[in-house]
Image (cartoon, rainbow over all chains, first blue to last red):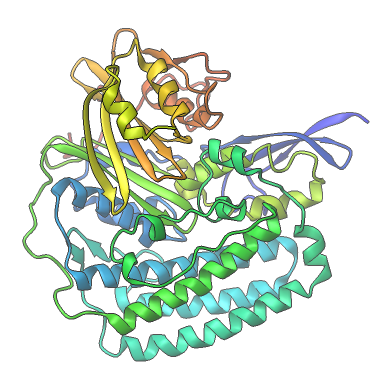
Length: 363
Length: 150
């Protein structure tokens, strides 16, 4: 049969942002594929060089992934703190863990909503959006913002947790934990869902590692790796949680890993709220600018391993700031490897399962 | 397989070796290498457990461009920060795409932003900017036209 190229994107419901997935089809089968990115490039790394360190905090959550702004604030601030060589108070690091894990749940729910909408499971889409709303409300209660928080500062966070937060948050977590199990059952009972996910989009382990694939996608391919657990930063070492891994390397396992991760995040938030120590929420004497030097801060973003590498020359502005976007490399590893030889109708489900966020890919 | 730290410390290709931690239990080995020995050095690292290229950051240092490679061992959580300096006149370095397929987009981005040519790269074209652009925006000579700023 004759082959032809089809452009899926830059405007396509599957892409979740602007990028172009070019697929070569042979009938229904995908013979080859290419990814074209850059439609959302805003030059954040250059803009950082003309902003002062504090001015860049709001930009770090607006310019990178808009669905998980908090984790990108953490990446940037973590790198600056590393160069400043400061240790934040215990309470501040607990609060950071709480907001980062709430953000992880909200981000995974956003993924669940958009992915199930791709699959046509609109019931799950609405449930996921409803649950996410509760977590955005919690974030709003803490930070004042729903998507872009500007909550972290060098040396801690901008304000303490509001009074009565624990009493409001714990019932939300309990209820969500129970509902999450129901949703999982509901999805697993859908035969169409299983047909469209099981055994589709196989991501071989060795290949995924060499392509720089990280996060839930790599864990679903059977690599038990999680920076929070293995090289704990902040105060992750104080909490009891498991790393979710898959075995089948397919779309279904990537979904299962994220569902488990959400319930693990609930455990972390609950424990952190219970153990929250007294003390300062911020270190108040910090240098105005970091000294000359460089540092890398790596963290476990909802989408994978994110990193910020800062080179400081001791002036008011960052000399060079580089971000590692996990999705950039997840897309590189996914196209064409995991969609080749699949049917064209399965492309939205497979590509959706890697959790694409174009804000951070194009930077 | 010997310990990566011992390998780096005992090999004289690697200069100014220092060992710290990037996080608890995560070893960070900082080192430098000459441009001539660069590819050999990377091959040594790869055969001693480095599993992928995590981050590639070029930046200007005077008349040179320093390229910092962050190489990661996924299984043992060891991060190697390898710096290599190239002259702004030549702007060439060997590509790592034959060692890791994943180096492809790293190098395309570095070419796009700095104009560094990676010898042996299969498809060295712009990735984030438009294909017909003639600018290398992350060079310091490229000034942003913003009032009140440098």
